[in-house]
Length: 504
Ligand code: HEM
Image 1 (cartoon, helix red, strand yellow):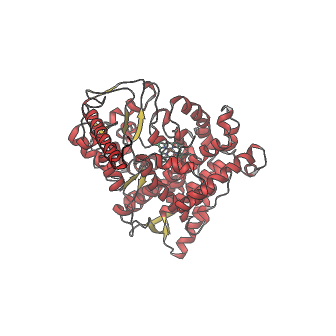
Image 2 (cartoon, rainbow, N blue to C red):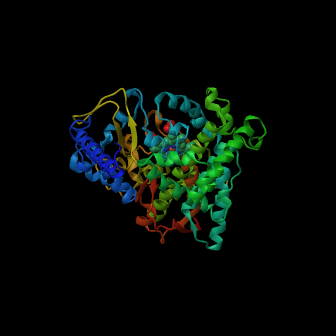
Image 3 (tube, rainbow, N blue to C red):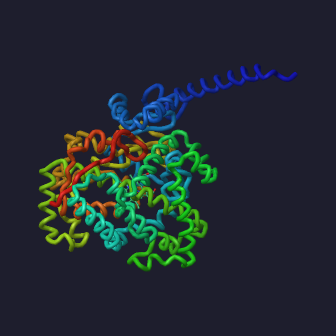
């Protein structure tokens, strides 16, 4: 005899409840992480994490400090994940001696299921993809890009001189984002600088990116949302999420460009002094499937998105802190004035990289204005870790958060103060191992050399010539990290960083 729908519903619900209770009991008493301390709700369910990140909007990162104070250096933050807070353990988790390092799916695919190095889960495939990218971002390659970077920086300085005369207020948030976007676009596609010259610095593009990042926070907790979005046509995505329209069009344009470059139809790079990233990848030793059009498209798309907002974030925060302190501003300006007597004829990059105060300012900026807000997650299938006597089984999803290391009072006394002096002398050298803004190990930031060169060239050029009035900027609202949207985000009501400029 067939059961009526009501009875089926009752049995179904009862079975589900029994399953859910059994699962929670398993997680508490029989799970391989059962011995690791943490909040009760987090050990048994994902509700703890969802409450802080989805309901309160990217707040779990800030709660972590409190949890570590209560439960110790190794804690369970959801049924399947461990978080470690011990700055001396960073290399233990991320370095190469631990065998294979797997990037868990939820973080690998947080920006979409892209077949790019950044989105690759397995150690072996990541190694293949990363080996092709590494030479493109070596110190020597970056050195070759200096004229490219200077081209965009000169456009910005011309605009700033004009702003001095007109007493214009402008948004430093979009200004640095436009500059870094122009530089990475030139490197990837030999595209002439565009955004830096626009009156609003291409604001819509960056507002759309912010919306995309807010969405990424949802996708890290509910991964099927992003996968589903990628499985439906772009035309429907554009209706569902209009803020994504330009980004999706840009991604499609890259596909066309890959084919145009592959078949030598695009000659834009002949006007520049460098090959494009697409050229270099096409000439690399990558196996044929890795050279397919859409694979290359997604690799380059991830470079553009990872390589613009992050550096811009450090630039704008650092520029604010310099401008907010007359002492730091004067000290930096004096160093730059004697190193760069003629601002239109700056010294080579290696000479600028030796300026002690500029480097100290940059390190302090990387520390206090670190864009990587979210914990960096890994699984080490070949290694059981032991942290302060707590055994973490091989294969466990584990993470550490650079934000906590960078604000650790024992390492950086008065951690909220922007104090470049802490990086000077022998004491400063001791701190190097605790500056982890670019991550560590085989999956550390591939663009690190490029980012550092941009920071040196841009801050030297701008602060040699200009002073900024930041009296209308609220540090708490416009500068401080207040939401973890995977990348750091400011308060929702922040208007950006509105400043005026004058000649130094
Ligand atoms: C100050 C600026 C930057 C900071 C602080 C930063 C930070 C980071 C961090 C912490 C990671 C490691 C994430 C992980 O371990 O899972 C990373 C990865 C990555 N970054 Fe950056 N980044 C910056 C600039 C750049 C630039 C300029 C580029 C591009 C060209 C870039 C491209 C990438 C890519 C492709 C990855 C993934 C690497 C891989 O998985 O092999 N980043 N970045």
